[in-house]
Image 1 (tube, rainbow, N blue to C red):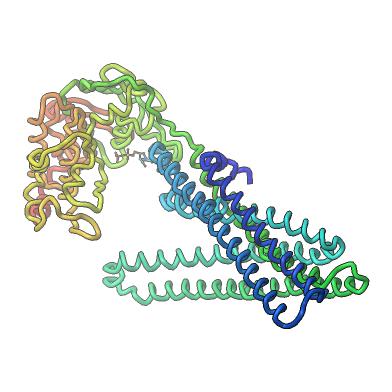
Image 2: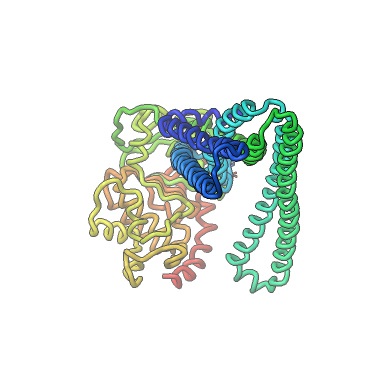
Length: 592
Ligand code: ADP
């Protein structure tokens, strides 16, 4: 329950709304409690038969009772409406704020956090867990305050009428509340299982739609169907168990309410013999008992809501209390001049213990194109992630214009870089919006086209019926791997970066187009420092300097010619790939 105290700051923010809600609850209950009292005094008056001169008087009295009763009922209902409008609305406002707070925090967290946590889990905390917490903020809080207010008023009035009878009729209520708590916990458990089964079923369905081509071509329809049937059957059985518990719930409550009512009538009746209670008093008791029933019944329900909310909030807190390990160290402005150096840099992934970089040292001068080549898994992406400060090295230092990377303004540094990652990610939006994604400045249509031409993708775009407005993704067209990569390069170029980082992003492009793109980049600007990572020699042979890495260690460095002359690792890779590339080229051309 301690975890829920995190939400107190929100109660403070919405204190006036909350306070108003509490006042409305008290007023609503006040009118509610007046109703039985009014019935009592009227019945007692009727029974005394004092000043009735005929049927007409009784009729007038009955109409009066009915009218006032309805008025009290309407007033109580009206204030109940206002209560919901304040407290439930407050819970929705806090839900909105909390979701924003979590989302903002997610954005601050670094790369290693996302590696550690599953996407589904992150999404669950912002949706499912926040919904659970809202149940505490809204109904949980509202019913608790309602119970306290009502209990105090009703018990006070009951004791005024008869203290002993009050004691007797209240006996079944705690039993009921315990029973309801027990049943709701059981129901929660069961509905969780039902939900789990349901999400398993959706996963099976979703995967079978997504993989329908594989399923059909391997003739696996029957197996997939069986898998689905098993899951659907489990879902049915678990739902039935839930229905059983659910159907035992209502009769139990009705039984206990009945018990309290019988006690009121029986013991009240006995007491009426010696005149300690009037007939009106007994009737008022029956009304009061009925009034208390639901709020009491809600104790069990509210307790289980609050327990779930506490569990959810502690999951949310776990994330909110995770501090990003990489923060912007300064607000001092930073202008990138183009010099980068790695000095004895090492990095080990904490989760796998794999040392991805070992004592790597190199220097890039302003305007240079620097290439890193190595086999898959040799540490190239790690090197780029360190360069973009997605993580910090364990040993050694990275210097940008002579300054340690950990000391410069990270936001401005990243703003001046254009990164083309290995795995292209395009949003399900228009091509133009995808290109504009990284731009913080105003961009003209001709600039957009120019960058697309440099990335050699303009001619593909204008071939689509809607050109730059063509939608991508599920609702739009699907691009080929090579087109996606070139679009991703155009997106980085449109930013007009001072540092261009290409992470093996030409792998699905044929060598001819690749050369064309690279030569465009070379003429782009003398001030553009480019770091290009590849496992393919063709992508990097024209670079000013080439670093060859193997198993995280730098093994050779030089120009293409120097390295070929040396006849070491680089020359070996070159000869190996020459033949492969020629074979692949013919395939890529088909895609164009
Ligand atoms: P490359 O880009 O050259 O293919 P990487 O830099 O991606 O190589 O990987 C270098 C080594 O680090 C590999 O052995 C890989 O398994 C490991 N590695 C990469 N990313 C992670 C990660 N997030 N967690 C643990 N190990 C990783």
